[in-house]
Image (cartoon, rainbow, N blue to C red):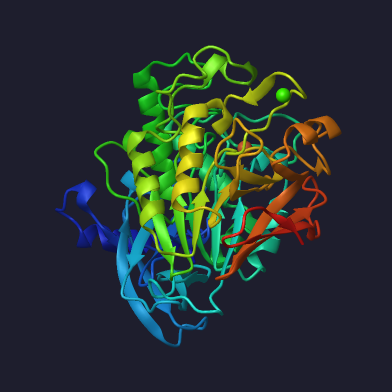
Length: 515
Ligand code: FE
Ligand code: CA
């Protein structure tokens, strides 16, 4: 559009709104010089009758406020077909600066088990089209029931191209789960594949710009448009390895961490298609929630960062016992979340219980023979919390619980046991740990700590691989199949996709079998 028209519009609007206090003005349908839909569209948190649709207006994504200057009303449409010939729902949402000009609409009254398309509109410009899925009727289960979940984590923007998301977008997944490290808070490092626009992120503007830069990636946008997502967070959405109100370096005061958490959590909410309850302070945003996929599966979205005790023994990998590692009062999820999950596992009638989890549950002992050395940041750093979880799975949903996990930038297949101090304890669950999208760079076939000796020490760990990619899990009434999809490189664009390994869990039967 011409600049003259833009100024004319502004003049007309200022006449229209003369006399209304500035902050209350709604500029309905402004004409923007640049495309405001640079961050794409997304949908998420589907139920059987609803889903959230999302966009954020950001004509200049790397500017504070994304280059927006006034409240803007956006029209949204949901249709049964990609060409929008049968629009089933439509409405208007006014985006404002308080929430970063983000748009969240919880679209209700949809049909269960259905596919819809959605888009957003301003007078001169229409957003890309996204596809959303609703869950089947609660309790519904038949021999043809399927749930195909692709899951991902750890997308360090600087370290590579998000090519894996292009492939994920074409998998025909019902749901995409993101298990954390959607952004990294770090300042830019020279000589990497891509360069961050800001220093280490510490202000709301910084976090918004970091999300905007990450979300501008075309492969990530394609995966968001492809189907509905369920998103949780890990540490880097705030600060590396933070725990509750303890920052990475244990230098920040509680008040400083609360302030940082509030900004980070708000920016997370602004950029994700999520439905979470309102809170008094963003610093206390509770994102634990559960979803049902007919009678086939329940998905429990965990938060193992916000409520956990500080890492024992100054974090890192440590010989145990050390310090307060063994203190029974130390927690990973906090009491309320633990009760919610354990009660939920006991009550759910659904065939599969899926834990959308951040850090590795199955302990990995790095010391062959006598002595044990564990990660203090993973569940192994919280042994009593780990035993409580293992017991809950064993008692309440044995051999129908599957954890999907991120964090460690490598692929693992782990059996979960009823207790972790005895190698002969029965297998009661499965953990599929998915590698990173880009974090760690190109990767390699095996990790340095995966040797004949560590293999023998950790018989519950069945397989390991350190390529980049994602995992595809398909649940049926009888079994769950996991395909580890990997790309050979991320430092150049255009990597092909391959299946590095495939595994199966049969419902009601202990163990994970290689296909
Ligand atoms: Fe990570
Ligand atoms: Ca050992």
